[in-house]
Amino acid sequence: MTVKHLVLMYPLVIALVASRGIVKQKQMEQSNKYVGMWVTDDGYIRQELLPNGRYDEARGNRQSAYTGRYEITGDHIKYWDDTGFTADGDFKGNDTLYHGGYIFYREQQQK
Image (cartoon, rainbow, N blue to C red; front, top):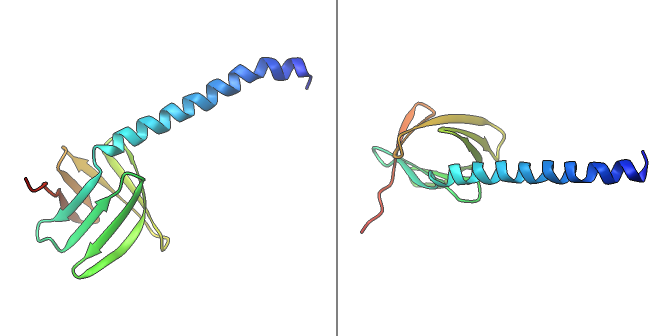
């Protein structure tokens, strides 16, 4: 490959890198609308979706029972737990999450 070829390919490479960044940013914006605390109706399971793409789930008195990363595409969420297992779920509207056989509700902010 000649220098001329490299010079001609440079704008294409830059465009590809930039478009990938835009896609990632769009995914983060999409996931940001779901950031926050999600709880089961009985309050036993509390799952916090953090803005950095991590989650922290408490069960009963056990804080950080499960931790890992997550990605959201549309209204679908995928989890990769730090211990190695994976899971997924689906958001219905802005305030309900179906995950692992449970229904989670967005925790309402105290005013």
